[in-house]
Image 1: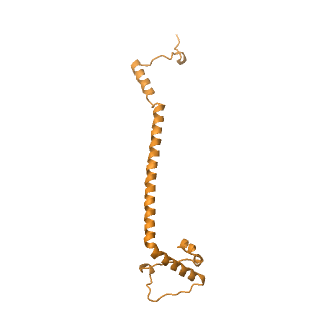
Image 2: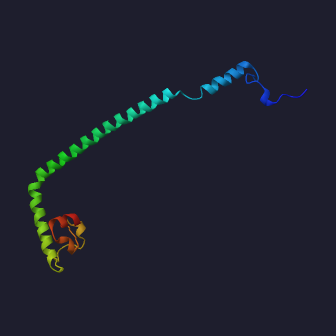
Image 3: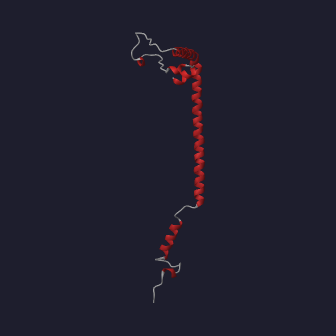
Length: 138
């Protein structure tokens, strides 16, 4: 009598106890969540991301409008004093940039200008042609 080959066995052959085989089948079947679960999970996660983005965008817009309002308030309050000073400085700078630089300085100035109060502007001579060029280079 010859041994039966693996191909001749019936597929209904249960190896070991039937209850253990049933538990194996149950574990294999419950290994993955159904596709419907993943579809709803992706939908809710996507909706959550969109809601978070809209809330965050609203906060950014609110901060931006507050910043621009503060900027307008500063311009309104300091503008009448600042703009004439700015125009004078730009005029002096353009005037100094027209001709070759001649070192002029007062003897009572501190050697380190960074420690003295005031406005210190250092530009290349080619940057002094117009107020826009001065603002860009400064």
